[in-house]
Image 1 (cartoon, protein in one colour):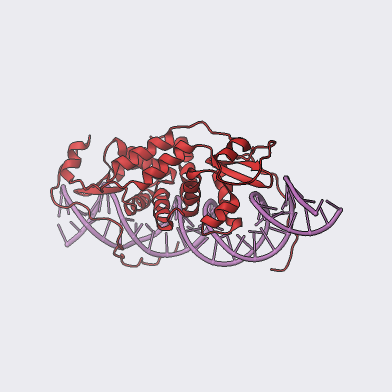
Image 2: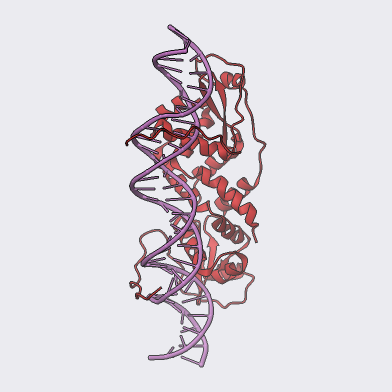
Length: 137
Length: 137
DNA sequence: TTAGGATATTCGATTATTCGAATATGGTAT
DNA sequence: ATACCATATTCGAATAATCGAATATCCTAA
């Protein structure tokens, strides 16, 4: 059942990645170590905010820094993870569509087929349902 | 400057991954297609909640479903992405620690070295600063 | 057509994230 | 010591994510 602890840890790690600014920071660090001031020039965010994001990345152990006088040179402390992750999300894979039949074959289950529909369910605006009948809760 | 659009899209994709239940769902789907009822047995979440997470995964185009009668068989519509991502976060890379000197070498910058400290800045509870002096804002 | 099963969605409340503003901190040079 | 630069942190307000409860919907069997 996909170990709950593992999932929780992995989710937390991924959360650290899941912000545009933080991704941009990581991307910049792939190119080489940088201090906060460098990043200010490269990113659309203010110093305080960048420091906040760096704190999150540090907490996730994705980055660390080496102090150089008054400067803190940030670097990736798990460069392979970061590089591979960035590559992975960059890459784009064609989106599959499977028919109920294909699925059935693949499924270790006993339900019976139904040849008609297969989903179109994607992003574009879901049709709203009827507003809910108000009831005491 | 690590394209802002790209970062935003990538961040959104990663957000879809960044939840323990959603990760667990994806993990289960790597093993093969499943309908919601199957997942209810496998995951520590209620039906409504699972459906909510599936909606998010669908929106991110990570999953889709094939209707089989009253059932909806969910499957990965970008299986490689999902598998690789899960593998990646599962794998654990040793955490690097670089000295200011190493960094300096690697840096296309003109600051001067400082041989002493390197960071210990990680997770465990940050020391609190002095509470801020209250001022009208 | 009605009932029941499987799944989705809406609402609302709770909790978590995010960001700017205002400092606090630490280092270094004076 | 003081001042200044680079960086962190706190607070607070605004926004977003999360989850249960209560339905709504769709499909099929009776």
